[in-house]
Length: 166
Image (cartoon, rainbow, N blue to C red; front, side, top):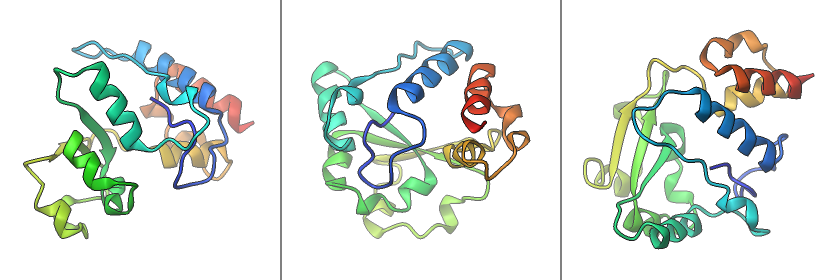
């Protein structure tokens, strides 16, 4: 689900609708061993896209399910600065993707987060996918060549990035 109005950084170059379309195309091209749906929930709001609001919405949609919130380790490092972060932890599990260059054991996590590892915070190694949204933004903004990421992107995402970086 693309974030519509990020409260913690400037608006992305691509619109929320463009990022939604790119996500839908990428999901369509990827073979997951389970069903994956892309939501446009945040696109219907004119307010900042706070994660807690989104999580609480999906808790009402799926009341009998536990929710997991996917994030990169780089986001976990600043998680205690997020809006109502304690409530986020109370309402879902954090599933943290580790990336090349980031190591959970070497990171400067807040003690409140460290004590939740294995309880409410879990990690998944993504060492074989050395690409991040930051790297894609750098290509779109002309700060990096497409060659740095193209081998790791679905064809539709590659086309979108190339079109937007021209």
